[in-house]
Image 1 (cartoon, rainbow over the protein chains, first blue to last red):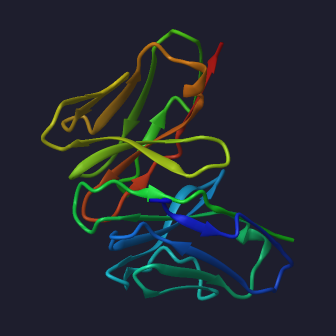
Image 2 (image 1 turned 90 degrees about the horizontal axis):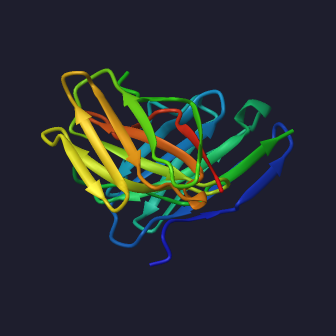
Length: 114
Length: 109
């Protein structure tokens, strides 16, 4: 298995632009997580899905952030409009939807908003 | 919050020495996990210890868990330069995994 695949690896955009990050989870995994990593705040859980259904989006910082999972093999995280404080590395992770299942992370998307 | 906190924030050792990292958390948990992150990459799962376990081994890794003190430790024996990375503990309870800010380990050849 190729693991969790995220695209793009790097994204540089100007403030106010729309940004879409993409994730393909490991086949057979039915939980998907979006995390954001910064030096100041560490790894923060933004939202997670079980069986394509959003379970908890309380970590989404603002209404500018939205996430979808239209099917079991694809998820997007959208920021509109983007702001410089959104600059971070965004990780997608997947796992089996049961306790004691480890997370498998993608290599992240490094977002820079100027 | 049940966020884990690793200690120390940074650790520098010579190749061949042992490295010990500690993690403290605040609430009851189902399990505690350790992950490793190399620069520019995603986190990789190393080991999971359940709340009813006290010690677990995997190769050169040894993890302990003390639920009465709400703490865990990760020991890497006979460290290698390739062990240089950031190490994170993560706790799973009533919510999905919550990560600490990590310990940055540097192993000098």
